[in-house]
Amino acid sequence: MKDRRKTLQFALMKTLPIAVSYFFVAVAFGMLMTQAGYPLPWSLFTSVWVYSGAFQFVLVSFLAAGAPLLTISLTALFMSSRHIFYGLSFLQEFRRAGKAFPYLIFGLTDEVYSLFCSLEYPPEVDQPRAMFEIALFSQLYWILGSVAGAAAGSLLPANVKGIDFCLTALFVTIVLDQWKNAASRRPALIGFACALVCLALLGASRFILPAMMLAAGLLLLDAKFRKEAAHEA
Image (cartoon, rainbow, N blue to C red):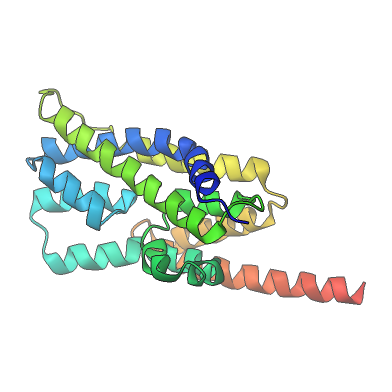
């Protein structure tokens, strides 16, 4: 029998590493927003409705430069397009969550996806509910950090340029953790090779989506060949 209290405890415990990383990265975002001339409500609003760590940092510079809405929208679409591939891995689990299905799609960030991929759910834990609570808690950590950073940014006269590097550091930490714990490192090597090739051919501003598509195609082929080899053996 599924236990709601144990499900809640499970979700809270599993999101503690995300809480630490999200809070401080979000603090950096909130400080940058305030330093760019946008008060606390802007940080709160974007963390509630945009909720895309990498794009939110880009959004600061767009807002400061007065970029057109079309440019901002297209950039958000392309920068977050990788989440389409993430979602394909959990369609069945998300459908079982019922009314929480749309929010699980919205809340599937890089860190939440990484956590979902590594989780094993005890029999007494309601998996769809746990996934919803993990996504929700993770966004709450981000919102709290953004608000705290915006409040701190309004009090700090110093220039905080360079603090946005903490987002890059977070992504590197996630990759290293997955590399260390993964049963097979072949997918990571394929993805890394695809990223390098597309970066060299297309440049830093246009390589992400083609690299993701190429990596997805190669991984599907790799899975097919390994399955056929297993049947033949």
